Length: 412
Length: 153
Image (cartoon, rainbow over all chains, first blue to last red; front, side):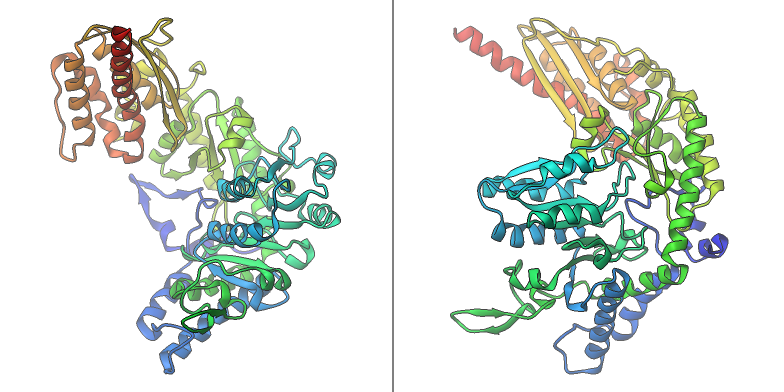
């Protein structure tokens, strides 16, 4: 386990105050805070070797290109991919999902085919498939959840059939916290000749992830939830699949040969990276990966299980707090969604803000799931490497206060 | 300022815990729905016109305290007013909520609404406060169209 106080010192933002109170940041599932090394890496690039990549025959460009490609290699290692050319930079996980839906999806999904999803998908791993299904006259199939918010594998086996072309599922739910059985789903998908697309936006920052062990076909995630800067998404795909896919965006950098009549595409990964990419943020992402590697993903996970266990116990002790998703901390990530009495989650969020506590409140971009749960939204506390048990204590105290101000209102 | 004496000051909490004009109007001139996709506030507004007068307004809502209280206060403020006056009231309220400068005072009969000024500090939630008012404007327009159709028949 790492020294939490030492970790906290690496995150300058944790020193700030909100409304006179010490900031308690419990919204890392929305975006994580950034260690000083990441912030410094950004300024270092702009101060010392800012240049466009992949074409300049000058020192700055060569340095920038090398740093940019170092991040790609570090991502390959981080997710245990076979080849760095299978790692494609996008602007966020959403773009990575759209890329696959618009290329692989359009190419392979035909009228009458099926795309299987779960009801716990974030809108970003839901709407692109919904729109693809509409366009291709295909059908969306939902793999059912058990009472405590886990994928019902036995039922899924019957729903993933020869008609299924794509199974798209989140590695970890941003609402329920559920960690999904990716490996089992990969077997079900591959048994019927379908591909498994994994939304790793929540999972990759928190769980040791090996695409080879998961045996998935695509993985999307974003660096900003992983201690890195905003504006960097990652798509990993099997080389054979990526090679067979048509281009997504066209333009500069993604070409091999351009004449007046026709254009041939660049090789992987640049075929999918049209235009000047987000150079600075990609380069700074390497520092985020280094930081997590130094902590060790096993330690990151152990720290989270400890916090989640502690927070769930605390919430349960408050009485009427309804907690969503599995209660076993080993089956969920560092995300706890709850509703407190009959209070609207936005009101909870507001009252916590007055105590300096940042949580997320609302539908968490999961409107279909909210409807299934029969709620307008939930309050959500999410943890990362810099959170402590003391912060959980302050959260619980503030929730008690929220109950005093707003509680005991009949649900309207 | 802390929440208890500001955003959630007594007037708001009173309207939240006991919303006025809650319910449905069976033969409403118009029924419109308002949604705030940001936080999931949902409300259905029933409006009964009598010529150019807003005879009755009722609201069913699933929302946060700001949304519920704002709708409750709005219904109290506009029932019995002429459409022209209602539009002035809505304008005055919106001006108050969007104002970047200090306190704005409203006419005496709208004093309760000043309690919502605290919300201005939380831009995200101004939308919660405005939802019932925007839905009301839509309701008036729909109701007027309904009336015209009826007259034509």
